[in-house]
Image (cartoon, rainbow, N blue to C red; front, side, top):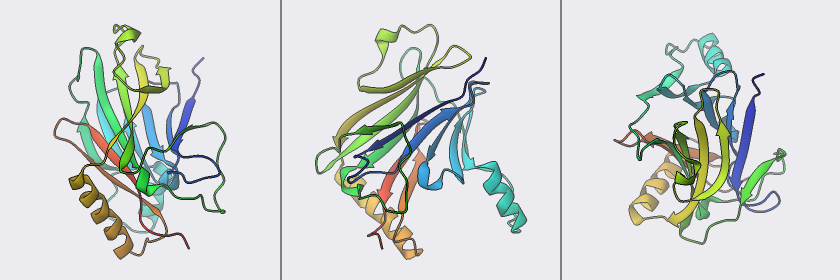
Length: 218
């Protein structure tokens, strides 16, 4: 019988500075898998469909709310792309989530930390933790897993393996500039007390998301 799965992960600690909590999940009925950032999980998610049609878009409830409010754009998918070519025999690099050490903050007293979060020790100043989601074909030996600390490995109904790895790396000067531009944009829109997610995909089809903090909490 198909069983749904859910993996929660974050950088920091439950009672100390922390990133947003991220969730990797699926119903188990199909090999479709999803990724969401907890602050916006009710509204937005990444969908990695078994068909190879991958999406970043609105959840059904959020899309229904927008439609009821009269928004003309009824397409749930904001970005659409095809599953990219393999980066190594059997391995597809699907998503990378970047969490800079500079953007960890104490948890708001209004937020409850869910159980089962896989916490990672914060990286050093000037570094970022990078979570990589990879899809592996059934025929590929497990020993061929790319470098990185294993967070989770989940078998899917189609025989593929969904793997989450994490490594720490330096934040390059050009990235610092881009991250600050994103924070400034959110603050200018009146969102100074929230986390913000910078997103986009590379020319190779890798979907990138950066977990940033826009400003001081109230």
